[in-house]
Image 1 (cartoon, rainbow, N blue to C red):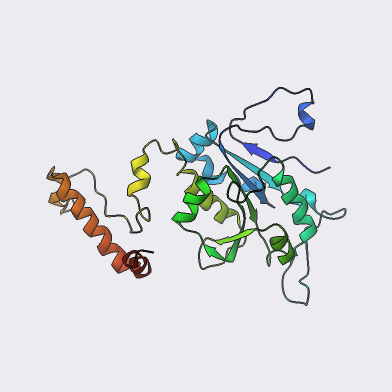
Image 2: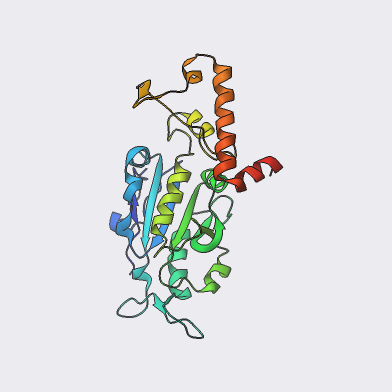
Length: 265
């Protein structure tokens, strides 16, 4: 018998005659759910349990469920990996082991990938961006598969129609850090999480540009004053200054984003 997924966040309980020890994890009605398949469930919630995402998790605005891959392993030692077919270094996560975990994660979720994406955190995947976070935030939830070692058997990616997504052009030892970063970026776009919808509209990448510089008190610090326009009270001038700064920073730091913005893509 496999271990039950570990859930974080307030649960909406439903009456049942089954003993609680035999129940699947109770559903959290109306809230976005992240299911994470991992060999290191103790790594969660990690930073997701802090600040605004942590408060929202505690109050049930979203739910995190970790599914430990190890109990789905083969044999006495619950092996989850084997040597690469054709030879090579490292180990590869087995398709049969992964399929059992994915089937468990799929229980109670819609098959429509638009409503419930299934994602493998992979350095060869399409790069994660704000548009992806926005798309995921509009779904009912997401299942994330955290890889380890040399990756996963390709057949399971094909069989389950899994979307491969990369945090960036570098390699991590596993997908857990990437999963937390992507979940954070997604959860904060959900209604009511930040408490101020304007925050997500004005920040970097929301308009395709990097964010303008920010300032606060004191008015002067170590001989560096706040730009006078920001203290003028002229909202039109402030908006124009911020736009110009966003364009300037984007051109200088991210010419790829600037070219995309200019082309209207």
